[in-house]
Image 1 (cartoon, rainbow, N blue to C red):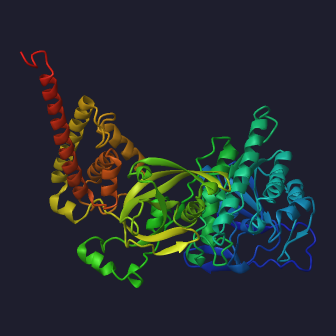
Image 2: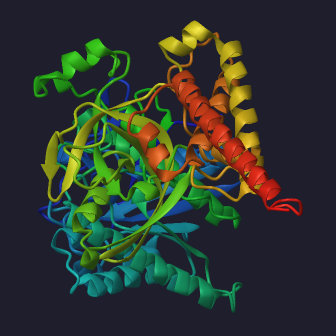
Image 3: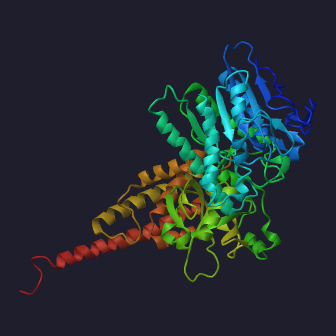
Amino acid sequence: AIGAVSAERRPTGRRGSGARDHVRRRAVTKGDGELLWSLGSLPASFKEVVADSTREYKILCYGDSHTLGMCALGKVYEPYGRALAAALSQDLGASVEVVVAGHYALPTAELLAQRDEDEVKDGLGNICGGLGHLLKTLDRPPDVVLVMAGANDTGTLTGKNMEELSDSISRLYALPLAHGFKTLALAPLTRPSQKAASLVRRARLAKMLSWWVDDYGESRADDPEQLPRAAFVDPATILLPAPADGADGHWDADTFHLTPKGSRFLGRKLADYVAALLLDTKMPTEYSDEAIEDASGVELRGIEVWRARPEEKAEAYLGDVEDDFARGELSRRVPTRSLALLMVKPEDVPCVGQEAEFFLSRSAGDAGTLAAVDYAVAWDGGVMACLPQIEDALGLPRGGTAIEIVDLLRWSDDEVMLKVRGASLLQLVAKHPSRRAKGFVVAMLQEVLEWGRFEAEAGIDALEGELATLEHLFGECGELQRRTNLDAAGDFGRTALSERVASVLQTTEPVRMLGVPSGIDGSRVRRAAATSHAALAALSVNQRMKLLVQPESLSLRIKHLNEYLGKVRSLLCARLAMGRALDEDDGPNSGSS
């Protein structure tokens, strides 16, 4: 059985007058388990013991106040190393000791300058040895060392000092590697209080740090037996810089530190990477930018992060909302929430199940869009509302696509390559923006349910009957297009509808479908929805925009698709018949005798 955590303390030498005495009391909080009132003497040790296991691992976590687990302005502590010890022990079935060491409020240059000192006094008077000293004096060499630094420097980060900070952090990463210890290099945490420009610079810093680890990995490839393994993790791929919400979420109310819950979440997720280093296995795929937990501890990603946000009451400032509810344009079953808008050319708006790429450059006038992307990553799990930019339009289109950012590559502070996927249809609550924020628009929206009142009245069997008609019409239009070479109405002939549907199903597989009752086969509804979205994506730009900006639930969407495809078939048949008639008129027996 796995034993309880013990908090052993090992003073690193003489305690100065400013150091706080270790307090062995615990603060017991409902649902959170035991918290530490103080870490006392540093480094602090957390053990998980498996009685019948012969394997024992020792891990060193070194860094700043995020590593120390400072919460609630220093009233309690919850180092991520404690949850790391528990998760590793459970996953590996082995005894694990995690040693936590670090310094509050010291910049990276100071950590590097005092790396070999046996006593380094931090901003709270705590005393702990520098990283180099710890690596030489621990009672047993660590199997893996985690290093996270730089959070105290990112507030003043600029393009000019970024390279200098990257070099200082990289030199800290290099210390355990020089001693022969496997190392997990962590980028400094992104914090909720950072503005969009700061988020961009921090992301750039993280990329530079990852390049350093990549370069080390390439040099290690020449001599893997002599050089220890290193890996890099950006905690921003695990913890979003979500709104600071105190004890109820991951970020403390000081907008800088983690809550106990957030620290434990980080420790559990880092366990996968540490285990890969310990066992010399492949590193796990990075967690997406949107990974958080809901109240039950279930991980949320992408659009689920946005869906988990509290509902925003539009009635407070939009006078015509009640009329929209009365007309059925909005549903009281679906929450209203805000999203940053991504306005693009009509032909570039992805449908649900499609992927798209956008290159954004400040020099090309995309400064507001870049800020909107940073806002979406920071607050909404990387979800945005993608709407067509229609020239001379009064207000905003009434609908568009909820897109998830699946990849974001920053070439520089001013250039970004964005890869997105369409996840759901959206209905705007009002045609005018709810607010503007630093060059971009944030608007109130509702998701469009795939299964609503009309679908419930018709039933799944009738819906699939209409779907069969859609598939037949699409195939006929494709054959007629191949015979007439006319494709102004859409592209129905080059790719079979079944191939399009398979692609949509694969792309939207992670996206939960809303509104489907428990008594209905969800897989049948999902396939029907995927077929409708695949057919919609094949339409001409103008027709596609007509249906996107007036989004509808599944049965109405299929109905209008069938109506349109029926007209296309009739027109193509008429054109084919006209062509035959003209061919006959031009035949060998035509003309005067």
